[in-house]
Image (cartoon, rainbow, N blue to C red; front, top):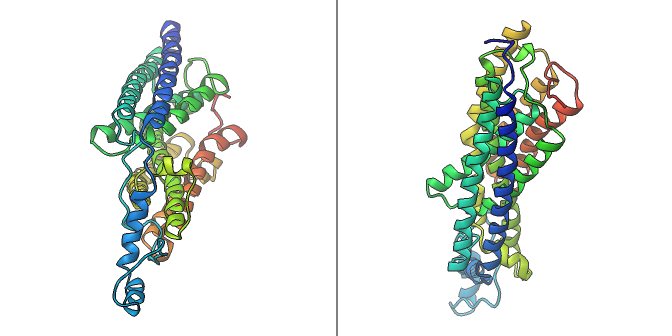
Length: 359
């Protein structure tokens, strides 16, 4: 690689324009998603409540009580059903953000279409940034951020293309992407320039790219986990005879069931965990080439390992009966928090061999 390669300022400016343009389109997608939720049908508690009543009617304890009263189960209110793990009840998935209505679904389709356009524009901005200096476009925190959000949106669109029911992620995803790009273009922005000597390696393409992919997919898993906690609390309230508020009902009834959200998050995290393991190994090999040692307890190395341990603990907890459901979900959020600190906290506040973030 030519270390003295000049920066193409024209392409760098085009990249900046494309990133700002993508933010404008993401903003339109954000409002379209808001319209999707507003115009979608506001279904009542009936679907979830009916399912929980059915669970109660078939529960052995309820049947025993019914037998004492003449063999007929008369349920005046939903009964509390004891289960092996939170989120394992048989409750149907919600119809989605659009709520099954034509108007809501139309706005949802518009939102997805705008997200596709914004993704294409943002991806073009990332490519232009790479071409402006003829290297991988993740040599500093600004470049890492714009690439990270591009990959996150790409992963979401792939799931949609595979006909997975994940449109409920759309509003939170677009909001987060706008926040990410806002921070990137203001606080983290760095002029397009050549790399510091330590980054001149083909391992930059391998190690950092896998770290970006892992972070983007971990983010989707974290969204599913967070919504699982809200949906599980909602189902628990109904199961115990409570009456959720109208706003909570309007939102929660459209989401997948707690069990579906829990399964989604687990599968996402489990699928990407081996790649995160490879990311750490690749980083160690690169460190050996660049600094003459595979492990030196650098803050970035330490927090990468802490993140690995946290996700390993989560996956182990999901395989342990006593730690399924909410306890495991809390572990998943802690693990993603470790990943976020490894990126933002270590790069900005901690000094080490990885302190070349450009901020």
